[in-house]
Amino acid sequence: MKINNINIPLLPVLGGVAVLVVILVMWAGNGFQSLRSESPPIQVRHDMYYQSKSMAQEGNSFFADGKAMRDHVPGTLPRNGTVYAFTTPEEAEAAIAGNPLAVREDVLARGKNRFNTFCSPCHAQNGQDTTEVVRRGLQKPPNLAAANARGYSDARLFHVISAGQNIMPGYADKLPEQDRWAIVHYVRELQKAPMLYAEAPAAAADSTGAAETETTEQSQ
Ligand code: HEC
Image (cartoon, rainbow, N blue to C red; front, side, top):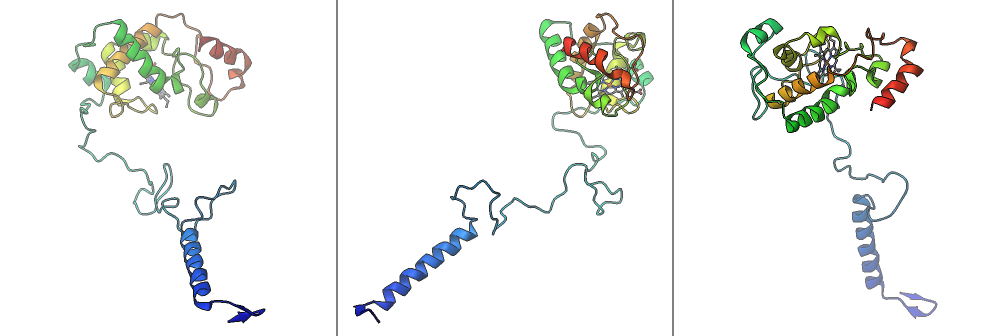
């Protein structure tokens, strides 16, 4: 082929164009990945960005109870886990002699670490204050330094932590026994502190405002 009297070798040119097109198509198939861009990537191929899966707390009509999150299969337990055998505090108190762990610095440190991680979202780090989840609507848990919880035996505290109490969930499937006992020791430590509130402040009341928020900040 001739353009302006110059010989154009048609085959090599077409071949080159074809190679370019193939490269472009393959690159597009990869979402033009090496290009920098502020906007979300063009997803010609979705990889695993979108999956047909259920997210936590989502509904799912596949199951009769309509929940996507499944309960534990009865009779199964986590690897290295133990079954918590008691359903009532009385059963636990009758069977459990007491805290098998000695009060030692490392035990208390472990108890504090686990308490601050697992319990403080609802009970606050001092076991007494109002927390953000309560300000956002959760029932205010009882003050752990109040006479009621102070009067609980170690076995009963262990039972509440393991099996839960009313709307408080149990932690037997999340915390190994040793950790739950370490928490019991740590709760005893927290109970030595003076009571900050005579009665639990109401969960949704506005009285959880200024004055109490200050105490929360000071104590953490
Ligand atoms: C999701 C919020 C939440 C978490 C997390 C939580 N609790 Fe509770 N807890 C509550 C509520 C609410 C109650 C009151 C339940 C009731 O009405 O009997 C309660 C009750 C208790 C009681 C009984 C107090 C009494 O006077 O009867 C103890 C003891 C206790 N919790 C300790 C713990 C410990 C220790 C942890 C951490 C392992 C923990 N809780 C984690 C919400 C929570």
